[in-house]
Image: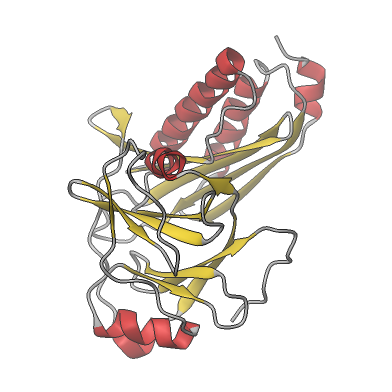
Amino acid sequence: MGDHASVHAVEVVVTAHGLVSDSDREYATRRLRAILATVDSAVGRARIDLSDSGEPGVVRPASAKVEVEVGGHATRVHATAETVPEAIDAVMTETADRFDEVVRHGPSVRVRHRHAVVGVGRARTARRRAFRERAVPGREVVRYKCVPTEPETIDRAAADLEVVDHDFFLFENVVTGEDDLLARTPDGYELYEPTATCPLEATVAAVHRATSRPQVATVDEARRALDEGDRPFVFFVDPDSGRGRVLYRRYDGHYGLLVPTGHGEAAPTRP
């Protein structure tokens, strides 16, 4: 068992947005501390983010996120539900499962992020929901995220995509050294490559090559491409850095931008 004194000395930072009560905050903190008490490795930081928009018509307006650094490895878990306590229960269950994996397989287990949603009394993989309609002039890039990429195979990228449960995954191809994008399709995955052609013969996952390649473009040009089409994202190459970037549609109708970091380079400035 872990060192209870050191666990309780760890500061658990809780942020709240919308219809979140003090009892919700206290309950989330208590649940996380109980989980951390079972971990033998040193806890570097612990953060909980709770929110409830209370927006009418939203199926799961409550959200709970946990980010914990244990033994130098960060674990991120996200859950959505109808109420904040339900979201807390779901996110803590997933967090406890994650630490069980670390105990069984060691801290080298690579799970960047998990996402659960409460439905029919248990956590399950989230179903995609429709994008909110928003007039083009009102759309903005409201989410700007730098993604630490590292060289990996296409199969490893496919496994990571399944773990994070997103529609696409930005990664550095270990064979070509390029920033590639792997996207979900009804029958497998689609690989987007800027210039090189990575062999797919040895790939276990059901991957087919995209018929088009990402273009060199600015963020504004990528925005116009999203505005004029119905695709959920645009993968493009930044003209200054030569790195791949992803501009994607958020469910609130705005845009998010993913920018890879790595090779010792600093995170670029916000557009």
